[in-house]
Image (cartoon, rainbow, N blue to C red; front, side, top):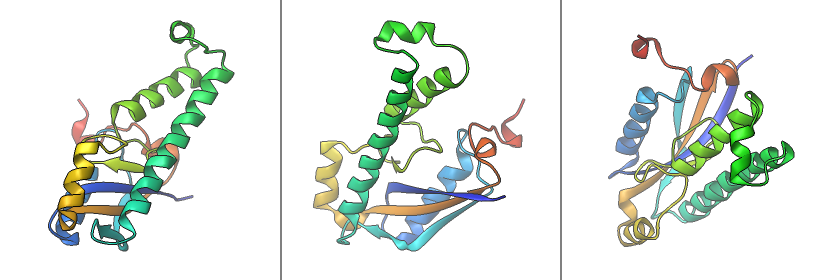
Length: 165
């Protein structure tokens, strides 16, 4: 049974066509995500000149924070209270959760990413980039992507055939 995942990607471009091309290349070259199909949704993508831009961007950042909070809660449920507890995490789900947390904090896009900042390789937005966007809003685009895959396991952490040894 097919599934889809929605991502919002921030990119710098002069128009939707250029932004879409950059985002699709990004997904094609990604080593961390392998989707069967990726669509950039033009009707739900917009430059920072559009009134929908900031609410969508800030909503995506907030949703990423909720995902991160959920993973932290999962680790706490496993007994993690201090950083020293990480060394004693059992292999399996708890250690995978720690790995996902590292990706969200470090800026690697993953299946759990709602918003992804391609410009800064992060799940947030720096004050400096916010200022640039405010000064040149037509140069920054938020692209909504619908990605399709057979199962979540197949989409996560798969190296494509061309990247195998």
